[in-house]
Length: 406
Image 1 (spheres, rainbow, N blue to C red):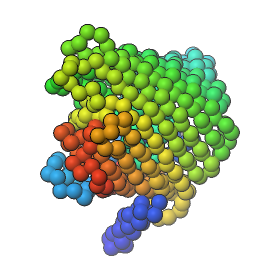
Image 2: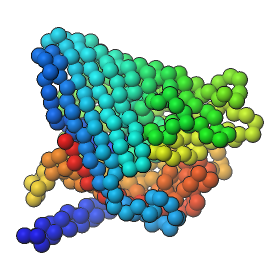
Image 3: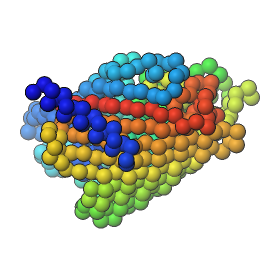
Image 4: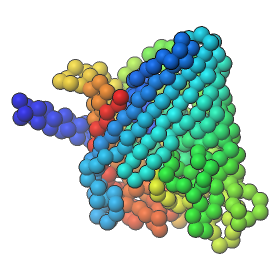
């Protein structure tokens, strides 16, 4: 019996390894009409008040094909993260009319803690909603233009999955989706903190720029709304201040994007083109061609001005194979074309596959990259900035993630 189980496990891992060559995290592994895993414990406090609690445990095994002696290269199989999620609502009538809402998620890694989101809101009716707190900035394809474990290169430039603190208004009426948001600051109101979920401008050394007063606008039109074949086109824009206490006056940053999302039965397609510019007001001794961004307890200099492109395709299957009931595979490509001629452009090709057995997921992901964060780069040879240690070489990074949601 033991050897049969061992053989089946080896077959699973082998199939995943083969499929990734032939083809913003947990949302990236689901069909568009599926709910995020977790938060499966529901409690009705009163006839008008209820909440849900859940979480997840992730274990990982990773490898890379370069020999640079860093903490990532020394890690083999390890505990990735533990998370807790809670959401709740209160209304005068259950399932009807206006209601108060709350949602939060805390995540612990072996080396840091981060709040992924935490907001309270009012849902006035099925069309109008207002949130206050740490929420995802409405920009580009939502909740993510990516299908992969690693996200696209947009994520590492603060343009995907970013969360900040402020107000957000959401309007949804069938195929018309509109977001307007004002964020006074990044999620912690502490630009020195790098224990954050997604990159923001951070302060360190001679880099003293931080974000304030960001405004986001987003509109998307969904054709075929309510069917299994939908086509979405959308435009997004954001603008905000860049403060620097060493200088009088503020800099600014802005970004604009066009996106397409196609969901056709079991096929999913994504494309996004984005233009961004950071224009800091630095002292004369600080190079304006890069800005300092930080997340996951790490920092990198990032090109101040660039154009990015992301494209991916994903296929879903409902299966009946041993313990598994769902499978999806994907292929994703993203690139950052930097304005500065002396900088090296960034590229990533990311094939992967996910097997699901109820609340358990096995996620195998490969990453081929040039001049990307954590792709044989470091602070002095920053991939998102001027370029990594070997700017013309394609680096390989592999990942196997086993996830349990409860």
